[in-house]
Length: 132
Length: 132
DNA sequence: TAAAAAATTTACGTAAAAGTAAAGACAAGT
DNA sequence: ACTTGTCTTTACTTTTACGTAAATTTTTTA
Image (tube, rainbow over the protein chains, first blue to last red):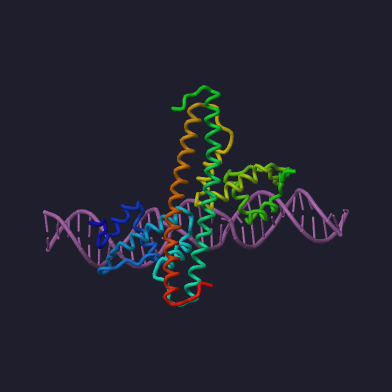
């Protein structure tokens, strides 16, 4: 039994991901997701849910909606034409470089935090404060 | 001979970091940096430069100006009071968790990119395309 | 010391990413 | 059938993070 439902409602997804309906509809307007419809009501398939996860991950990393759009484009079926394929691989590598930069940024920032904490602990020792 | 000058002008920093004077002044307005002055002219010390580096790193990671402000607060001298010290350590850990989340997000996103690339390479093999 | 280059403040403008509000259409339970 | 709750579209508003322009010093260089 896999945890994959046929369809999700919009509010189910807002609750799962802690975002608003406005946000989800905004992503649709921006072409990031394309849920099915029954009449006017949106029906979200597992793939829409996965795309939402991807979007939110990328958002946490500071990617813009436009950049996320590029990622999602690639995420779909690979094109049939050689030039397009090479272009896509180039774009994949661009995104990879961006992610590697972010990785370095994280390491540097963590180092700074480590220093802050050490300074605090040192100061606490000086003051004879318990570290609770 | 260390590469640490006494003072930097605002345009030196804009060139080094590829940002505008408006941006730097904006960060000052937001209280992130506090350059010296000679009359009305700003004189940036090495510490201001380091703070700029920190700001830009954090920005690439998607932290808001407000969040960066919190980081910079900690970056200064540790406080003298026990409660304050504990609070600061708590905040350090919060930021660390945020960074760990980002790290996980990077790993996931890289995995997706790897899949995209593999799909492309597979498709290229099918088509008998050289990988140039 | 005069002209050119760089710096300053003030203020209005803008793009991105939603928030919020209004008003109507659907759907579901009783 | 009716009400209650959910969903929809449309449109205006807001916040963040600067861009841009104007008018004015200040500093540097000729």
